[in-house]
Image 1 (spheres, rainbow, N blue to C red):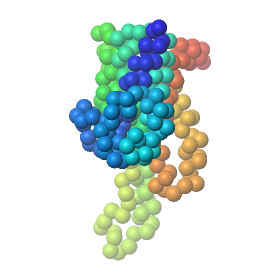
Image 2: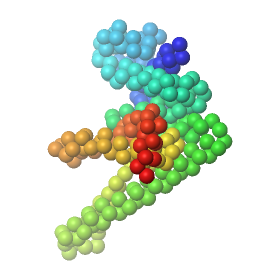
Image 3: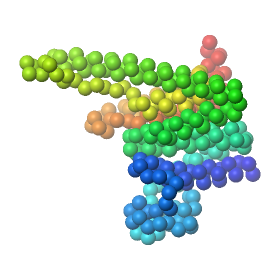
Length: 271
């Protein structure tokens, strides 16, 4: 019964998550107004909004204009249900588990927005971090989570600064080789950012959820998960080569969180 309740709760929250993913990039309120079809703008009836089932019964089409309903909607609802089901198996039904579930759902929303729009909204990033920090549900645990969040936020900030400096310096050296008399007093090279600010906040959330050792393992795993995609996009244009990294960080965080005990045993056994 607990597991069924957890899955249903996750699916219901996933339905709301679809609203968040759709509206926040468009700077719309997620609380005001009823759900509507993005194509014809007609307000949806309550029976059009039943998670998973409505998409199946409507055959993936709007009840008014027959425009296609993205597969994203049932996909996010099912994934949200699976996340809550997995957390219930690991932690049981409790308020701290609920907060941790909220953090992972927010990371899921960030992943989809980053994948679709190449943006990472600060509001969702801060929410994911707050849920992760307070998921400890004790003064000592909250303080430790906050400490780990600061540690990885600072570490990623330093890494971003160092890599950006190296890449920009390299571009500067190349630009100096092509300098002319009229361009010698102007900067003809770009400032290259090696990492987005959104990744820094996600790293802080990872630190709060996993602790130091497991976060390092998750960062390594995220790089492994991203590697095949990076190799694939090398053949594409420069614009298409921009691969969002938040989905890989979020995926790796969830995997490491669920298998934290065997991963920690392996890490400690290698010392």
